Length: 266
Image 1 (cartoon, rainbow, N blue to C red):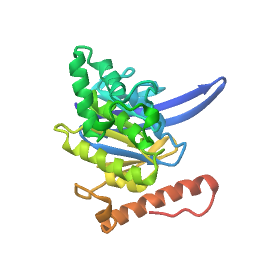
Image 2 (tube, rainbow, N blue to C red):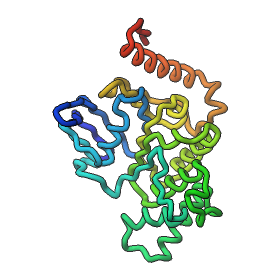
Image 3 (tube, rainbow, N blue to C red):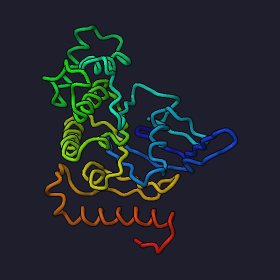
Protein backbone atom coordinates (compact mmCIF):
# COMPACT_ATOMS: atom_id res chain seq x y z
CA UNK A 1 0.00 0.00 0.00
CA UNK A 2 1.63 3.26 -1.12
CA UNK A 3 1.11 6.75 0.29
CA UNK A 4 0.68 7.98 3.86
CA UNK A 5 -1.96 6.36 6.06
CA UNK A 6 -2.85 8.02 9.38
CA UNK A 7 -4.81 5.62 11.55
CA UNK A 8 -6.68 6.69 14.71
CA UNK A 9 -3.83 8.96 15.71
CA UNK A 10 -3.87 10.61 19.15
CA UNK A 11 -1.11 12.43 21.00
CA UNK A 12 -1.07 13.58 24.61
CA UNK A 13 1.51 16.06 25.91
CA UNK A 14 2.62 15.50 29.48
CA UNK A 15 4.09 18.34 31.53
CA UNK A 16 4.72 17.26 35.07
CA UNK A 17 1.33 16.14 36.36
CA UNK A 18 -0.55 17.97 33.63
CA UNK A 19 -1.77 16.29 30.44
CA UNK A 20 -2.94 17.98 27.26
CA UNK A 21 -4.64 16.22 24.36
CA UNK A 22 -3.07 17.69 21.22
CA UNK A 23 -4.41 15.27 18.57
CA UNK A 24 -7.58 13.25 18.99
CA UNK A 25 -8.23 10.12 16.93
CA UNK A 26 -7.19 11.46 13.52
CA UNK A 27 -7.53 9.23 10.47
CA UNK A 28 -6.84 10.21 6.87
CA UNK A 29 -4.99 9.07 3.78
CA UNK A 30 -2.58 10.98 1.55
CA UNK A 31 -1.85 9.55 -1.89
CA UNK A 32 1.57 9.41 -3.50
CA UNK A 33 2.36 12.68 -5.28
CA UNK A 34 -0.47 14.65 -3.66
CA UNK A 35 0.08 18.23 -2.56
CA UNK A 36 -1.76 18.56 0.74
CA UNK A 37 -2.22 21.82 2.63
CA UNK A 38 -3.13 21.72 6.32
CA UNK A 39 -4.90 24.84 7.55
CA UNK A 40 -6.57 25.88 10.78
CA UNK A 41 -6.35 28.40 13.58
CA UNK A 42 -3.29 28.71 15.81
CA UNK A 43 -2.98 25.94 18.38
CA UNK A 44 -5.27 23.49 16.60
CA UNK A 45 -2.54 20.85 16.16
CA UNK A 46 -1.19 21.48 12.65
CA UNK A 47 2.48 21.55 13.61
CA UNK A 48 2.00 18.67 16.04
CA UNK A 49 0.58 16.55 13.23
CA UNK A 50 3.55 17.46 11.07
CA UNK A 51 5.87 16.58 13.95
CA UNK A 52 4.38 13.09 14.06
CA UNK A 53 4.83 12.72 10.29
CA UNK A 54 8.46 13.84 10.68
CA UNK A 55 8.98 11.14 13.30
CA UNK A 56 10.00 13.65 15.96
CA UNK A 57 6.88 13.01 18.06
CA UNK A 58 5.57 9.62 19.10
CA UNK A 59 1.79 9.04 19.06
CA UNK A 60 0.09 8.14 22.32
CA UNK A 61 -2.15 5.84 20.30
CA UNK A 62 -2.73 5.03 16.64
CA UNK A 63 -0.02 5.05 14.00
CA UNK A 64 1.27 6.50 10.74
CA UNK A 65 2.17 4.21 7.84
CA UNK A 66 4.32 5.17 4.86
CA UNK A 67 3.96 2.69 2.01
CA UNK A 68 2.36 0.27 4.46
CA UNK A 69 5.18 0.42 7.03
CA UNK A 70 4.88 2.14 10.44
CA UNK A 71 7.26 5.05 10.94
CA UNK A 72 9.67 4.93 13.87
CA UNK A 73 11.60 8.16 14.10
CA UNK A 74 12.93 10.19 11.20
CA UNK A 75 13.84 8.66 7.85
CA UNK A 76 15.60 9.56 4.58
CA UNK A 77 12.33 9.33 2.65
CA UNK A 78 11.16 12.48 4.46
CA UNK A 79 12.65 15.99 4.33
CA UNK A 80 11.49 19.01 6.30
CA UNK A 81 11.43 22.76 5.63
CA UNK A 82 10.62 24.91 8.66
CA UNK A 83 9.36 28.48 8.97
CA UNK A 84 12.77 29.57 10.23
CA UNK A 85 15.52 28.95 7.73
CA UNK A 86 17.62 26.60 9.94
CA UNK A 87 20.81 27.19 7.96
CA UNK A 88 24.23 26.91 9.55
CA UNK A 89 25.40 30.54 9.69
CA UNK A 90 29.09 29.61 9.31
CA UNK A 91 28.44 27.64 6.09
CA UNK A 92 27.83 29.23 2.71
CA UNK A 93 24.83 28.26 0.58
CA UNK A 94 26.38 25.29 -1.20
CA UNK A 95 27.94 23.98 2.00
CA UNK A 96 24.52 24.05 3.68
CA UNK A 97 23.02 22.06 0.80
CA UNK A 98 25.92 19.58 0.71
CA UNK A 99 25.62 19.04 4.47
CA UNK A 100 22.03 17.83 3.96
CA UNK A 101 23.00 15.52 1.11
CA UNK A 102 25.80 13.96 3.16
CA UNK A 103 23.32 12.79 5.78
CA UNK A 104 21.63 10.41 3.34
CA UNK A 105 24.19 9.86 0.53
CA UNK A 106 27.47 8.89 2.14
CA UNK A 107 28.49 7.07 -1.04
CA UNK A 108 28.92 10.25 -3.11
CA UNK A 109 32.33 11.72 -3.85
CA UNK A 110 33.20 15.34 -3.06
CA UNK A 111 32.75 16.20 -6.75
CA UNK A 112 29.33 14.50 -6.89
CA UNK A 113 28.25 16.31 -3.73
CA UNK A 114 29.29 19.66 -5.15
CA UNK A 115 27.61 18.98 -8.51
CA UNK A 116 24.37 18.00 -6.80
CA UNK A 117 24.48 21.06 -4.56
CA UNK A 118 25.03 23.33 -7.56
CA UNK A 119 22.21 21.65 -9.47
CA UNK A 120 19.65 22.32 -6.76
CA UNK A 121 20.82 25.85 -6.03
CA UNK A 122 20.35 26.51 -9.74
CA UNK A 123 16.83 25.06 -9.55
CA UNK A 124 15.92 27.63 -6.90
CA UNK A 125 17.62 30.47 -8.76
CA UNK A 126 20.67 30.85 -6.51
CA UNK A 127 23.52 29.57 -8.66
CA UNK A 128 25.24 32.97 -8.47
CA UNK A 129 24.93 33.06 -4.66
CA UNK A 130 26.34 29.65 -3.75
CA UNK A 131 29.30 31.08 -1.84
CA UNK A 132 27.24 33.59 0.16
CA UNK A 133 26.81 33.07 3.90
CA UNK A 134 23.25 33.13 5.29
CA UNK A 135 23.92 36.52 6.89
CA UNK A 136 24.69 37.91 3.44
CA UNK A 137 21.35 36.77 1.99
CA UNK A 138 17.76 37.98 2.38
CA UNK A 139 15.18 35.87 4.22
CA UNK A 140 13.67 34.71 0.94
CA UNK A 141 17.07 33.65 -0.38
CA UNK A 142 17.81 31.75 2.83
CA UNK A 143 14.53 29.89 2.50
CA UNK A 144 15.40 29.00 -1.10
CA UNK A 145 18.60 27.45 0.20
CA UNK A 146 16.60 25.49 2.79
CA UNK A 147 14.25 24.24 0.04
CA UNK A 148 17.21 23.32 -2.19
CA UNK A 149 18.74 21.38 0.71
CA UNK A 150 15.50 19.47 1.29
CA UNK A 151 15.02 18.64 -2.40
CA UNK A 152 18.65 17.67 -2.95
CA UNK A 153 18.30 14.59 -0.74
CA UNK A 154 15.57 13.42 -3.15
CA UNK A 155 12.94 12.61 -0.51
CA UNK A 156 9.72 10.85 -1.33
CA UNK A 157 7.85 13.15 1.06
CA UNK A 158 8.40 16.88 1.66
CA UNK A 159 7.04 18.24 4.95
CA UNK A 160 6.76 22.04 5.12
CA UNK A 161 5.80 23.88 8.30
CA UNK A 162 4.72 27.44 7.37
CA UNK A 163 7.83 27.77 5.18
CA UNK A 164 6.86 31.20 3.85
CA UNK A 165 5.36 32.57 7.05
CA UNK A 166 8.35 34.74 7.98
CA UNK A 167 8.82 36.23 4.50
CA UNK A 168 7.43 39.49 3.09
CA UNK A 169 4.31 39.28 0.91
CA UNK A 170 6.01 39.90 -2.45
CA UNK A 171 8.75 37.31 -1.86
CA UNK A 172 6.14 34.88 -0.59
CA UNK A 173 4.31 35.00 -3.93
CA UNK A 174 7.58 34.36 -5.78
CA UNK A 175 8.41 31.36 -3.59
CA UNK A 176 4.92 29.91 -4.00
CA UNK A 177 5.33 30.00 -7.78
CA UNK A 178 8.83 28.53 -7.52
CA UNK A 179 7.65 25.67 -5.30
CA UNK A 180 4.75 24.83 -7.62
CA UNK A 181 7.08 24.82 -10.63
CA UNK A 182 9.62 22.54 -8.94
CA UNK A 183 6.90 20.17 -7.77
CA UNK A 184 5.17 20.04 -11.17
CA UNK A 185 8.39 19.53 -13.13
CA UNK A 186 9.66 16.69 -10.93
CA UNK A 187 9.68 13.47 -12.96
CA UNK A 188 8.10 11.65 -10.01
CA UNK A 189 6.08 14.17 -8.03
CA UNK A 190 6.87 14.28 -4.36
CA UNK A 191 4.17 14.03 -1.76
CA UNK A 192 3.97 17.42 -0.04
CA UNK A 193 2.33 18.16 3.31
CA UNK A 194 2.33 21.95 3.71
CA UNK A 195 1.12 23.71 6.86
CA UNK A 196 -0.16 27.27 6.36
CA UNK A 197 -2.49 29.89 7.82
CA UNK A 198 -2.93 31.51 4.41
CA UNK A 199 -6.18 30.49 2.69
CA UNK A 200 -5.18 31.82 -0.74
CA UNK A 201 -1.84 30.04 -0.52
CA UNK A 202 -3.55 26.75 0.34
CA UNK A 203 -5.94 26.99 -2.60
CA UNK A 204 -3.15 27.94 -5.01
CA UNK A 205 -0.93 25.03 -3.99
CA UNK A 206 -3.10 22.14 -2.88
CA UNK A 207 -4.76 19.13 -4.43
CA UNK A 208 -6.60 18.73 -1.13
CA UNK A 209 -6.97 20.90 1.97
CA UNK A 210 -7.18 19.37 5.44
CA UNK A 211 -8.96 21.85 7.72
CA UNK A 212 -8.11 21.30 11.37
CA UNK A 213 -10.34 22.18 14.26
CA UNK A 214 -8.64 21.78 17.65
CA UNK A 215 -7.11 18.31 17.90
CA UNK A 216 -8.76 16.87 14.78
CA UNK A 217 -9.31 17.15 11.04
CA UNK A 218 -12.83 18.51 10.67
CA UNK A 219 -12.99 18.79 6.86
CA UNK A 220 -11.15 17.29 3.89
CA UNK A 221 -11.71 19.58 0.92
CA UNK A 222 -10.56 18.73 -2.63
CA UNK A 223 -9.30 21.63 -4.74
CA UNK A 224 -10.76 20.92 -8.17
CA UNK A 225 -9.38 23.90 -10.10
CA UNK A 226 -7.18 22.66 -12.96
CA UNK A 227 -3.41 23.04 -12.99
CA UNK A 228 -1.31 24.96 -13.79
CA UNK A 229 -2.68 27.69 -11.54
CA UNK A 230 -1.64 31.28 -11.21
CA UNK A 231 -2.81 33.82 -8.70
CA UNK A 232 -3.94 36.45 -11.24
CA UNK A 233 -6.44 34.20 -13.02
CA UNK A 234 -7.42 32.39 -9.82
CA UNK A 235 -9.24 35.41 -8.40
CA UNK A 236 -11.57 35.45 -11.41
CA UNK A 237 -12.46 31.78 -10.96
CA UNK A 238 -15.85 31.07 -9.33
CA UNK A 239 -14.55 27.80 -7.88
CA UNK A 240 -11.80 29.75 -6.14
CA UNK A 241 -14.21 32.30 -4.71
CA UNK A 242 -16.62 29.61 -3.48
CA UNK A 243 -13.83 27.59 -1.87
CA UNK A 244 -12.29 30.67 -0.31
CA UNK A 245 -15.64 31.66 1.19
CA UNK A 246 -16.09 28.15 2.57
CA UNK A 247 -12.69 28.25 4.27
CA UNK A 248 -13.28 31.75 5.65
CA UNK A 249 -16.55 30.54 7.20
CA UNK A 250 -14.81 27.51 8.69
CA UNK A 251 -12.25 29.79 10.32
CA UNK A 252 -15.00 32.15 11.48
CA UNK A 253 -17.03 29.33 13.03
CA UNK A 254 -13.92 27.99 14.75
CA UNK A 255 -13.23 31.36 16.38
CA UNK A 256 -16.88 31.77 17.37
CA UNK A 257 -16.85 28.38 19.07
CA UNK A 258 -14.06 29.56 21.36
CA UNK A 259 -15.24 33.09 22.15
CA UNK A 260 -18.99 32.54 22.01
CA UNK A 261 -21.46 33.97 19.53
CA UNK A 262 -23.71 32.98 16.72
CA UNK A 263 -22.40 30.24 14.43
CA UNK A 264 -22.39 30.58 10.66
CA UNK A 265 -23.48 27.31 9.06
CA UNK A 266 -22.16 26.04 5.72
